[in-house]
Length: 92
Image (cartoon, rainbow, N blue to C red):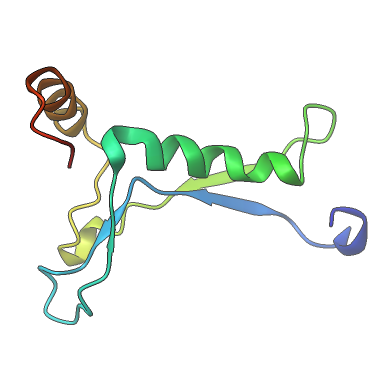
């Protein structure tokens, strides 16, 4: 992939989840955050195409939070997941 498009700048993206059910324009799409695992997984996707010798130059963290999707990167979500995991009530 790198060799094919040497004249382009690669930009990766990672995201914590997605839920547009509160947005007026939403289509009821959901991607669970899985207590941060979705963000961790998407941060690793680029490893299929880039390595330490030729790293991905840019990664954007997609939050989509400006249109009521509730996907901000916040510590509150992680703390809540820890409580849910301890109490056995599930994840976000």
